[in-house]
Length: 290
Image (tube, rainbow, N blue to C red):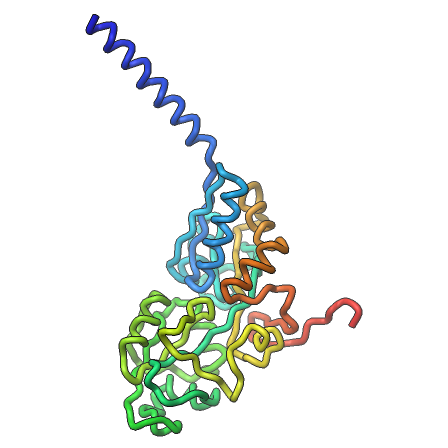
């Protein structure tokens, strides 16, 4: 009797393993790695994609633009997320990659909420991050030393910010952080601190700074009045196929562009009135009927 029960249990256990194996084999997964600025958008779009396609899962990881571009170049992932054009990154062969621009995003200077400054010029911002201005009283604020929190080298957010603000002027040595969330937390906790964030990471724990009298809004990014912005690029190694192509097509649907993209604080590609190339040249976009 015991032998029969053991045999029955073994058969049932084997059947469960077979069925479980069949189920897992039905599931498809693609991996997107890279830019932390793009991560919230790719994650939420991935979640919605999986709701519509229950056996298909988008594995989204950060690591920074440099990681995203190097990983996709090696073919280690399906999608490399980047705040930069591949042409802007050393040791990346852009000719082997296909660029899918899914949104534009503003990079916003932020300060600790106790800093009594509301606006800076681009020149003042450059002088702060290059170490020429070291106290808030030099730009109309209180007598308080400036503490700079920078993103780490390799960060696309940092590169995009420096391209539009620093104009080749070296940044002063300062504390560096890999994570946008950690940057925001440190600025919140540190008197006199300044840094920058991609707009989707903004919240009321820190204060944004106007630049040249312009507020960092989606509308001002669309019209290039806000000068500090970049694209969110999703790169593939060659033309995308299968589930990767279907996911990229899904991100460009009206539902994602009009709802998810705007909800998170990005600007839909179709709303941009200006375009920026990998050399930083900005030109108006000709709309149909213009």
